[in-house]
Length: 62
Picture 1 (tube, rainbow, N blue to C red):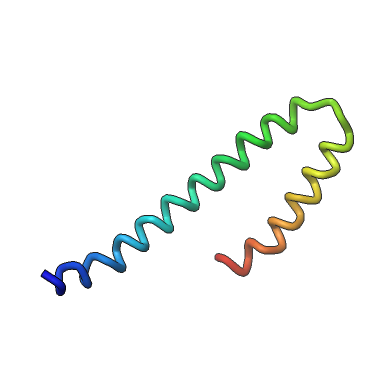
Picture 2 (cartoon, rainbow, N blue to C red):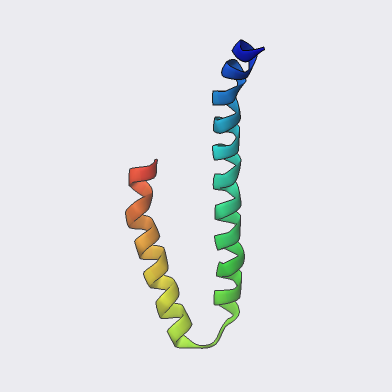
């Protein structure tokens, strides 16, 4: 039974990693909709800083 667990363990980790990445992206999209509807300029500036920092870290994770 241990060999079966060792066979499926890497597949389970890969499955969780792929699906957790989609959830993160979805959360940022929901936040983007809220930022878009906000009239405060400070919120838009903070959002642009967040997006730029995310863009700088994304190429290293891909």
